[in-house]
Length: 81
Image (cartoon, rainbow, N blue to C red; front, side, top):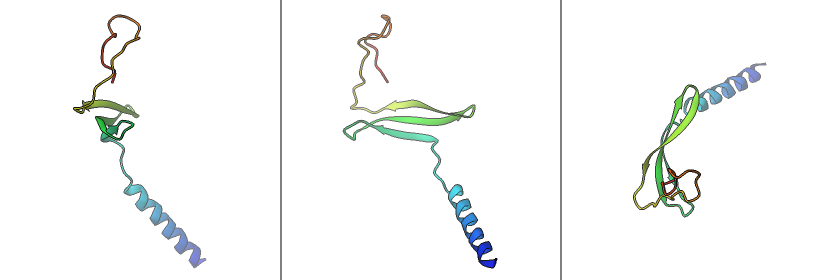
């Protein structure tokens, strides 16, 4: 009985420590293209219990693609992010 209590205590302590030091996903992250070059900075945040993301910076040296076949004339030629 004593061994079970000690094992239970160790497992509980281990799980508690792992939960406490887990990495948070919120913050600014860097995205990469297929060749491994940095492309942009994306901010992840929580709003109304949902995980949301927003592009906060497009790094220099990256050329954004433009819309060629978008419906409506307003979007044609505009950069896609």
